[in-house]
Image (cartoon, rainbow, N blue to C red; front, side, top):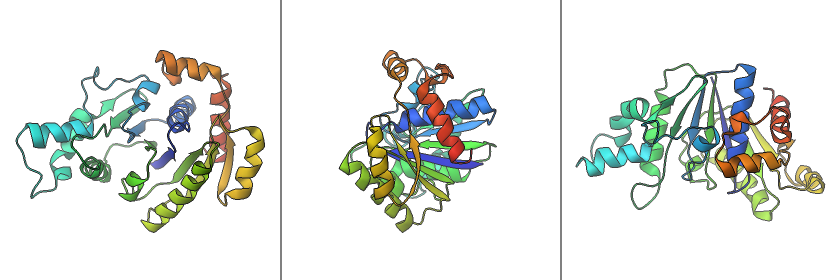
Length: 253
């Protein structure tokens, strides 16, 4: 089982990348997959054609709210993460033919995502089902990285956009991953579709990490996202999908 993490600033295209990566693995027969949506916007499910609510599933945040606040429980004593681990797999996990999906969800109380993140981390540590790949779609911030949701991963993909802040994000993300001792094998940088070709040379000059290349712009991807159609159904001739396929091959997949 390999764990792959996609991160980047908001709007960089990291969730699109994860969805097209999912399509690539499915077409290659590299299944089953576990998709983990850590982004509060919860866009990953829609991009792969799954509505957790319609499927009768709940996010980790909803399970915490239901168990400890609405249910009159307490978060004192036994760690909440241990108390809802079984619920995550029973009620929070969507199970499909090629992939399963679980989402952290939006904040259930004021403050940080410490409890939902801790619950997810505990559940992942106790993972027993055999997945070929675990694909984690991270949010724009680095707080989830700081809390080491996954302390051991194989590859990190940081999606960069055409901005100074995006360059700084890559530098900070790499530094934080090292500082909190996340054990990873590769840290890759990928240019989002909004990055102009002439800036790619600048990326390779300024960033001391492995640059894989760029996700191609594809109007059809925009149309699919706007209409709510899953990107798993986009034709294999899609420029965006083909570029992701080539990026994954460069990364050894």
